[in-house]
Amino acid sequence: MSVRQVLLIAMCCLFLSSMGFAQTDRSANVNHTFPQIADGKFGDGSYYRSSLIATSVTAGVTSCTLNLNGLPTNRLTGGVSTFDMTNVGVYTVLQTTGDQAFASGYATLSCTRPVTAYVVYEYFRPGTGLASTATVFSSQTGSLAQFTVDQRIGSRFGFAITNDSNVSNRYQLIVNDAAGQQVGQINVSISEKSNRALFLDEFIPLPSGFLGSLLIG
Image (cartoon, rainbow, N blue to C red; front, side, top):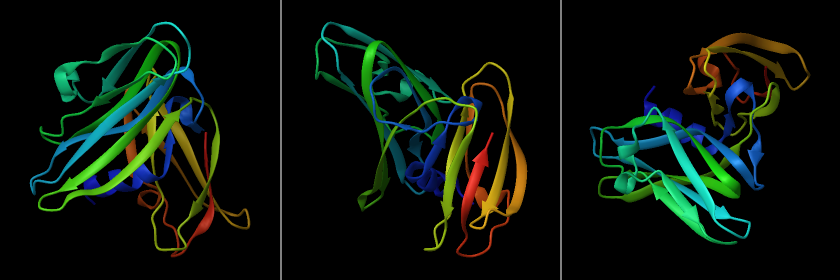
């Protein structure tokens, strides 16, 4: 399976952050986590580019820093990872260049005042241009999560787990069918300050058209 396949699915589905759980956060916060960032080219000339959009929701100066994990700061246009927003409604866009060899990781945004933030992922093909795009909001940390797994239309359930702590963590994945019967269980270890984007059926065999749930803790 190619890295591109994993990222295309992960971008459009669920994201988990450090300590096992994160849900979509559409509210303002001083800290944001984006469990998957993709940037760079493949051998066939196709490439990914990621853009962070942050908007201030308070009066006064808001200072922010974007930290990339798994990608160097020079992946950002101009190499700029810090910025200020001066009033309510002011927004900033930080974009990766997409012109180096492919790399992926995760990102955290820390600000002095609450901001709203999301990442736009874009995938380009030679001769075609923009082939796909997805908008993903930031995630909050947690210790337990349960999600619906719906593969009835031929899709595959993919997600990303980010461990933003300073120690390696092990996450238990339990899959139940629609009747609540367990169909599989596995542990996944994630090193400190790293992430993994994966398909659920890479680890737990699932029948065609599966409908059920995934518990992560």
